[in-house]
Each structure stands twice: as C-alpha cells, then as structure tokens.
Amino acid sequence: MATIPCPSCGKDVSDKAFDCPSCGHPLRKPKRGLFGKLFKWTFILFNILMVVWLFGGTNAAMKTQEGLQGAELAGAQIGTGIGVTMILGLWVVGDIILGLLVLFTRPSK
Image (cartoon, rainbow, N blue to C red):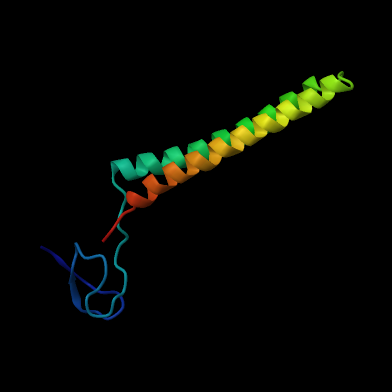
C-alpha cells in the first residue's frame, strides 16, 4: 500500500482512500461500475428519444391536420392529444424506473 501526502494538511494518506482521514479533504471521486454507466447512459438516451418522439409526433400530426375541417379536424386533434398524453405517461414511467436504477447503481465510497 502506497501513501501520498494530503494536498490540504500534508499528512500521509493511503492512495486508495477517497478522503483524508485527518482533515476530510477529498482525494479522488468514486467511479461508477459497468451497470451504473449502462443505466446512466440508457437514462440519458431514453430522455433524448422521448423528446424527439414527442416533437416528431406532434409535428407529423399537425401536418396531417392541415386539410381537415369540422368533425375530422376535431377527431384528429383529440387523437393527437391522446397520443401526446400516452407519450408523456410513458416518459414519466420510464424516467421513474430508469432513474431508480441510476440512483441504486451510483458510486459509493
């Protein structure tokens, strides 16, 4: 086991330590494991996908409503509202599940 001097107090500290036991100065940050990195990037990519899906879906729905009138337009708008609600619901449920997985796989000292 090698020792290094603490940058704050100068005492010798193990090179495996995260904090100095004398003054509490942080020496290095704990890193995520493989599953932690996988869940974190899945969470980020899921949110990007949901943003693209939401804007792409509403844009496509608006383009199809351009030539409609009356009851057809009302039905298309109701369908768009239902679709947006379903996307937002899926987004919330997915974020809760993936967020918990990211939280439980965070690095610890």
